[in-house]
Length: 267
Ligand code: 5RP
Image (tube, rainbow, N blue to C red):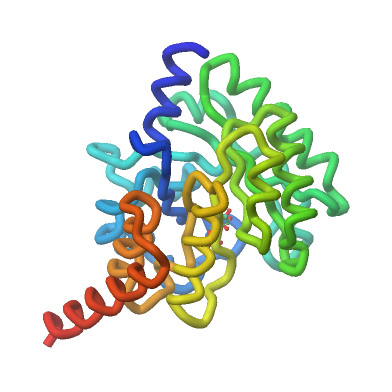
């Protein structure tokens, strides 16, 4: 592997081999979704605890300070809004833009089992072809659109393995029961996404802890952080699971303590 790609990959994982990415790319298909109306305000208190931002070029240019920014994973697929068939995606961002923006990696969604399976697999393949010339790592995003029930080990293992075979350097997928089966069949690092916000913080800590125990390399969690009324305590408790060996119970206690301290400080 060339120096440039090794250097970029080294920015995506801490020395412990783990990562915590903060995704704020949702507007590309959801519009101004709740708590992400002004991305710069949402992320300002959260970036100290994240290892990279997952973002489109538009929000990157408009809302992220280029001086001292976190490593950037650029979302480069899109094309359909939540009102249409989400799987009908193409690559939206040229390689020149990727290079101009000096990003650490790019990310594109692939919709296995959808009407646009082949189209989105080929999006990934073409992206890997182009990016490998310049040493840019590629993160493949397991996408299920509105079919959230697809998130089981059999489906997610199929998708993860396909993305690694096509040449992805990192696979983003969902947590599921028997998550070790997804990791076992995938020869590149697997990171967990969150999906729509769940009811309690404890549920988030439970699935994140379980996923890490079963071999996930980290987390790419958006709505369950920045749609929580206490996003900084969420970030810090999740960072403790990923990088400091906290259990789900310890993370929950930490969250409650930080939340109460925050509430007390607010008066
Ligand atoms: C949406 C994405 C997000 O990066 C991914 O879904 C993670 O965010 P969340 O935890 O909110 O699901 O790919 O375009």
